[in-house]
Image (tube, rainbow, N blue to C red; front, side, top):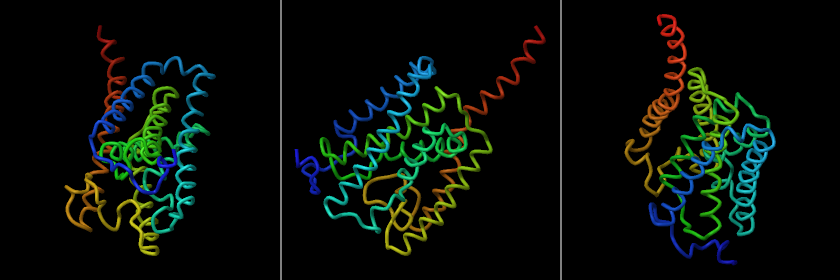
Length: 247
């Protein structure tokens, strides 16, 4: 049992290994279940159970990770401050779920799903299953996406074109703040100082520092694509009454 929490990895994580594929399949199943039962979850009690279960997973993931860092004497302002994009999204997701915040949803829909999905597909992770870090990593990132989808499918929240630019503005303010912390601590939060050692989207976006500019363009395009289904849906709803009038 102790080895599950050991600082040394007994087995190194390999992307798209059987354990990684199993977690991705579990992730897909959880999304399917949430969508399938979305109408049932609109009943207050059932919805609250799911909502606060997600809050619990997110809080316990972050809390246990910091306890693990402290336990092994690894807590360091250079590496372990909650300044990674997904960690920030985690905190925002908790607040969004507790207060059912529409404003936070407009940010987390883009930043949370975009960042967490990339983390799930190209994990910057050293530990394989059944290590604590493997379980914590995937539980936290899956819960971030499920939190956003819960607000989307159960609570009926929708992103807007304005929120695309709000998310981009938030992301750029975050880059300035986190970049300043990196300069002060020598850290590499949000990979603003250098690329991760593991394979990631950044590998195809050019060398440092040009990949940061490329990432801005990619983020904007991804956010617009994430908004596109809602723009099309809104357009269809506007056209349908006019078409009905000609019948």
